Image (cartoon, rainbow, N blue to C red; front, side, top):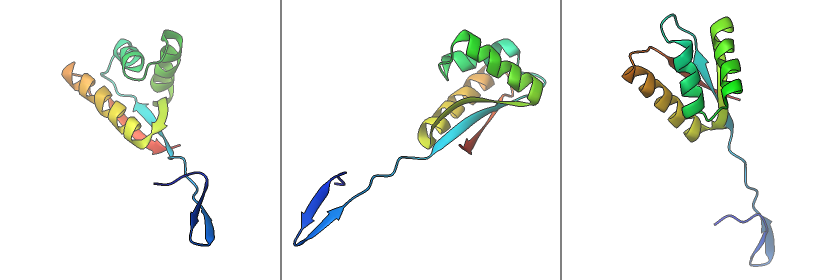
Length: 102
């Protein structure tokens, strides 16, 4: 088990360094069918953004074609993107998400 401290193995002292996991951005992509209200709902319920921040991200998606929903480790980013897309499909929306290294 790695420790962030010295371990003694025989006569040699060894230090193990732990690397922080890489961060990934979840990016929502604009389309002509997903409503702005639904995008805000997804940002609040899946990505836990407040109402004001969700509105800002939604407007970025609407005006520029994409917006960052959040930055997470890969597993969390992937799971949240999948949840958002699944929610959209259940409501009949073609919302798309990308995951990019931050």
